[in-house]
Length: 236
Image (tube, rainbow, N blue to C red; front, side, top):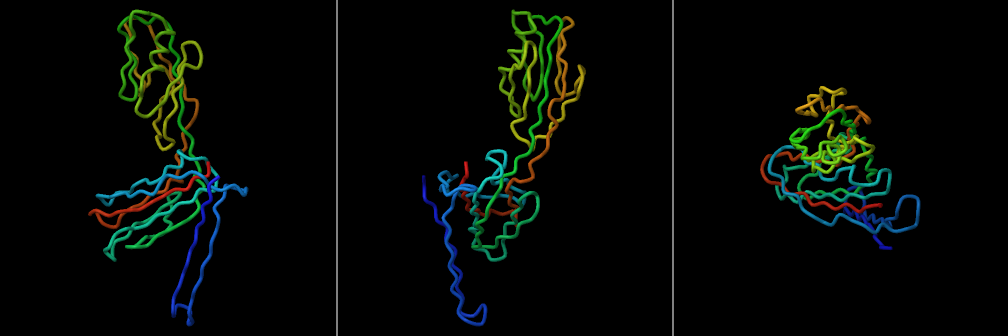
C-alpha cells in the first residue's frame, strides 16, 4: 500500500485584512476505506497546438464512482493565456498561466455500442464482409462457421469482435463516445457482405450506445503552443 499525502497552503499578508496562513493536508485513500491510493498515470506534459478541445483523461479507461484524484497545471508564462477545463461537458473553470487544480473525479463511464452479425446460407471462397474499414475474405473452407471465425479474428480500429454462438459474431465499440450506428437488418449500409451465392450477414443491435460526458478535457485560449502538466492518481 502506497502513502500519498496532498497538502494545500494558502498565504497572504492582506487578503482578509490580516495575515492569512492556511494549510490543510489529506492522506489520499480508496473510496470508503483507509487503504491508500497506490496507482497513478504519472506526471506528464501535453503540448497543445490549436484551439481545439483535447481529452486528457477518458472515463472509459478507469473504474467508475471511485476516489480518483486529478492534478492539472497551466505551464504557460503568458498571463493572458488560459486553459478551460470541462468535466461532464460542463466548464469547471479556467487555468491561467501558472494556475493549478487538484480535484476528485468519479470517472462515470458511458455505454459502449454493441451489435451482432449472424452469418447464414451459402458462403463461397472469395466472399467478403466489410466493416469499419476492414475487409474479411473467406478462403477455401466454405462454411458459415468459418466466416464467423474470420470476421471475429480481424483487427478493427473502433470495435472488438468475438464469436458468441455458431455463425454469430458480436461487435463491441472500444469507446463509449463512438456512437457508430449500425442499421438493423440484412441490408446494412455499415456492415456490407458480398457473396457469390446466397450468403447473408444479418445485423441486429444489441446495446444502444450512450456517450461518456465525464471525460476530462481542456480547451486552450490560443491556437499557439501551450503546455498542460497533468497527473491522475487512480482508485483501482
